[in-house]
Image (cartoon, rainbow, N blue to C red):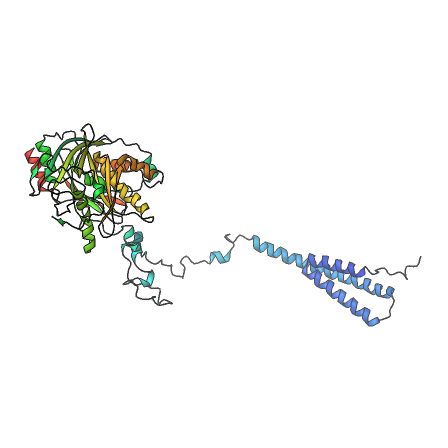
Length: 503
């Protein structure tokens, strides 16, 4: 057979060359360069000869391939030798005894030891200042001038920058203890606090001259035909105090034992404590004095804000309604109100028990009525502005709560409510049963009476366990209205001191 006419490389020769070049390129950089040079020389020879036959072309290519193979072998060997030298350098022990660089290492470094800057804020004391570093007034540092100037003459923030909300500032130096109001309504509602039915064990009356008598001469009788006075003007009156000494004097007069009593107080103080379970925006305070195991809660009046004339008039509209809704032998039928003396009052002395706390309290009573069989009961008289659709909810949330607390603590079964207009004229009256008030607001989930009792039980437990014998305190509820605070007082009221001397 004659192979001279046969193209040994054919159309696939280029592909084979490319494959050979790629394989040699991947093996080593030297072989890749030699392959590319040989392919370029062969392509130039082919172009020079132009119409030469394929056999001569293949022969020249084959002869050049042997020389290139020898060159590739020598270059591959040298390349392999270089790689061995690099591997040897990498495997050398830099910390061996033959390492000259290591042996020449100086024992003392010529570079200075870096010094860290001093700690500037120990225990985070500088948190209250404005900014950090060079922005702190009177603080020197060595970091050089800043890139930006201080952004304006801002005042320093007080109380660690949080304001008065968290009360991180200076605490009152009289501070003794506090009770944080953290328990939720749901938690308090789970407690079932027993409340003993109030029992009246004494009373006293104060008359217009200020004299005090230990009987019921100042007790007024409720006028059942109060509806006939609808339209009466509550402004047609001239407004003529209660004292803790009167209550203590009644206790001595009736020889009421105090050995098993924990608290002696007016009902007004208990009203404040129970209402605080829901009303968290009204400040109050009271005196706390422990003597012979009995805690006396004295009434304190806070200074009131300046009132307008209309506000002052509203304050005694209630007194006018009380006079209008009770029998007065000196006033003829249909005759208006001429005089109201706020000093005239009747006070009932009641013994009760809230949880484990035995309480002796004085409660002022507005008037009384009697059943068909002659049994006497007390009636509470209240006034309120005529209700509208946008004021009814607030009335039931706040006013009904206070009405219920005041009547429930003293065992008053009925409340007669007189509604007035803005001009002070009586519009209508309504009679409420004390036990029905809780059912009225229960469906609307405004408040629960059991939560008020549970809250008062916790306050009395904390109070009785904290105060010490023969020491005087002030219990206050003040902004931000998140705790009850017990402060040290300077002295005990004279009425309590004299009462103890007379026992």
